[in-house]
Length: 156
Image (spheres, rainbow, N blue to C red):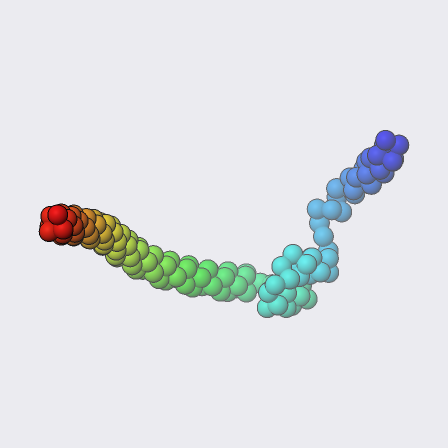
């Protein structure tokens, strides 16, 4: 319990120092800090980091900002078109998979019916074999009984 309280007190003490930043300096970062923060925010794209560092070195004009904005909009439009084409491909693949699934379900149902028919035919065939064996046994029994009866009659 004592360790928990000391850990909690340490945690509270560390959290309180995070709020000790001057709001005036926190809202206006220098260009070097902005350039250093840009790569840390998006480390996956190397082209954006080089653009951010060059932008921090040169003052941008309205034309350059407009060009950058147009380039970004073109990138966004190309990404949207790419996503739309991928979505259409996925929808087509989904429809193909659904039709294939329905075909396979129909085949499965047909095979299940065939299995039931074969099982019922097999049981009917076994019933007929049993009936034929029984009839054969009864007829053989009559012949044997008749032979024994006639043999006894001759002996007397």
